[in-house]
Image (cartoon, rainbow, N blue to C red):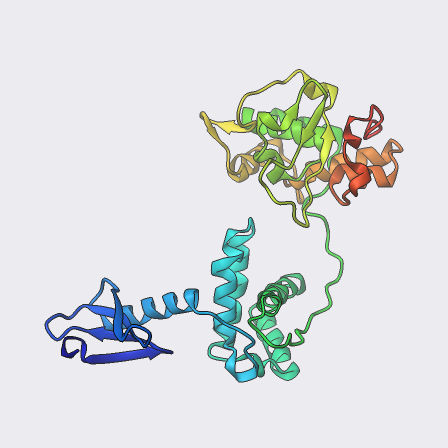
Length: 334
C-alpha cells in the first residue's frame, strides 16, 4: 500500500498515482470487489501530461447515463462526439473546426448554461470572428448534433433547445460555363484534369465523387456508373447510380480514374487553378462549375426537372426504385 501512497489528481474513482521510488505516473483505482488496486502506467513523469492522459482516457471510457443540467459537461459531450463519431466522417476537418469554436467559447460550461441569452451571445461571438451566416449555422448544427447524439444514446436526460440563424440563399460553388469557355479550359488543362473534366460533364457528379471513382464502380456491359463506392455510407450529398454516356464508354480504365504521376489525385486544386489561369477565364470558375454546366445543359435540352434532380443525386428512390437503373429508359434523356 505504501508503494502507491501519493495521490495527485482524481476523476471519479480513478486517481493519478506515483510510486515512492519512481517519478512515473499511473492511473489507478481501488477495486472494492477484489480489495486490490488496479493500475496502469501513463508513460510520463510530467504531472500536466499525466493529467491530460488520464482525462482523455476517462472521457473515452466512462459510462454516462441520464445526466441532467449542471451534471452534464458540454465539453465532454463535444469531445465524445468527435472521438466516437465526427472524426470518422468525410467532413471530419470541418467538424473539428466547428467543435473547437464551441469548446473555445463555452469552456467549462454545462448543459444548464445553454440559455437562449448565452446562445445568442455565442452567435454574436461567431459573427465577430467574421463568419458568414451559413458557416455560423453549420457550426450551430454540429454542436446540436453532438448534443442530440448524447441524448439519443441516453447520456442526457433531456435535449436542450439550440438556436439557429437565418441563412439567405447563396450562389452555387462555381458558375456554369459556355462551350467556348470549356474548350479553352480543357485545352489549358493537364491530362489528369482533362479526364476529370470529361467525367464531370458526362455524369454531373460532385467533384469528390469523380476524384474517388474507381473502375469497379463502372458496369461497362450495362452502361452504369455507381458513383457511391461499396462500403461508403450515403449521406446528405447523395451519390446516385447514373448512366454511362456513350462518349465515355470508350474510355475503359483500371483502378483510379484520376491519377497524376502514377498516384490517385486526392485533389486537383493546384492544377485546376493553373488551367483557369492559362485559359484566361475570369469569375468563379471552379470544379463545381462543371456540375452546374451539365445541369444547365440538361434543362436547356428539355430534361424533366425530376430526372435532373435524380441525375444530380438530389433525391433517392424508395424500394420500388431497386434495379430501376437497368430500365432502358433510365436517365436516358439526361
